[in-house]
Image (cartoon, rainbow, N blue to C red; front, side, top):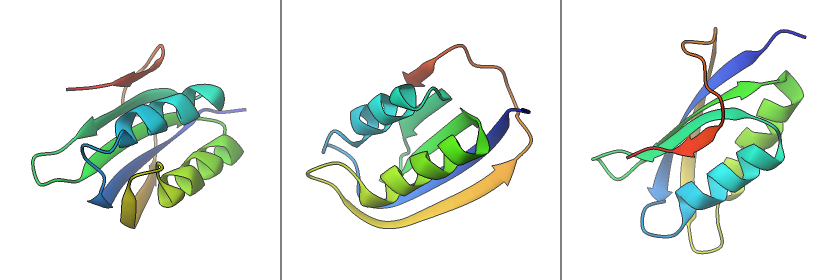
Length: 92
């Protein structure tokens, strides 16, 4: 099966609440590769690659968020893979 990619931008109370750690752990558990990072505007972006059904599960997890987060919105863009990743990392 061909690897697909999603780009997600998550808004709400998603910084300083362990959201990136939550996203990275969930992605790794689903066998996805890519990264998650904080943006200067207070949102978080995530790029994930893997099987379509796993990407859907990941996007669902992002919508629910971590224990202390409040997710207002998750914009998901499906696209062709833009880079190659070996793992799922927390970027700075």
